[in-house]
Image (cartoon, rainbow, N blue to C red; front, side, top):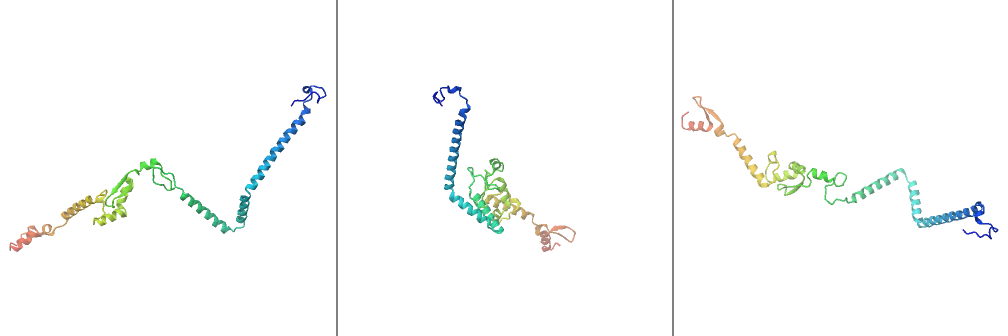
Length: 217
C-alpha cells in the first residue's frame, strides 16, 4: 500500500518500523479467515436443508432397527442376502463369443474353451440329430438316456459294439452282422451233436438217423 509522507509526519515510510504494519496485516488475514468460515457455514446450512428429508428417513430407519428383536434382525439380514443374490442373477455377463458359463455363472476363459474343444459340434442321427458340444460330451452321450432311447427305438441293444456309431443305417448294418456271427456260433444239434454206432464209429446226429432209417445200424 502507498503511504504518504503527510500521514507519517513528514518521514519516509521506508524508514518506519515494520512492526507498525503488523497489526494492519493481521487484521486483513483475520478478516479473510472469517469470510472463509462464513462461506463454509453457509454451504453447510444449504446442504443441510437439501438433505433434510434423507436425514430424517435415515434417523427413522436407525431407530426402527434399534427397536427390533434378534429374530427380526436375522429375518431382515436373510432378505437382504436374498435380494443381493437376485440382483446378481439378474446381471447378464458380458459374453460376445457365446462361451459356456462356469460354476460362478461367468463365461469360462477362452483358452479353456479351446482346450476342451467346445468350439466343435458332433451330430448324432440316432439321438434325433442332436448336436453335442465338445468331444468329451460326445463320447459321454453313448451311455446316456437319449442315445439309449434311440437304440431301443431301432430294436438294437446299446452295447459297446456300437460305440461311436451315430448313423441309423450304420447301426442297423452292424447289428445284422453281429446277429449273423452269433447264428454261426450257435450250437446246431443236427450237425454238431455226435452219436456212436454199433461198431463204435462216431457220426453226427443227422448221419446216425439216416443210417438208422436205412436199417444199416
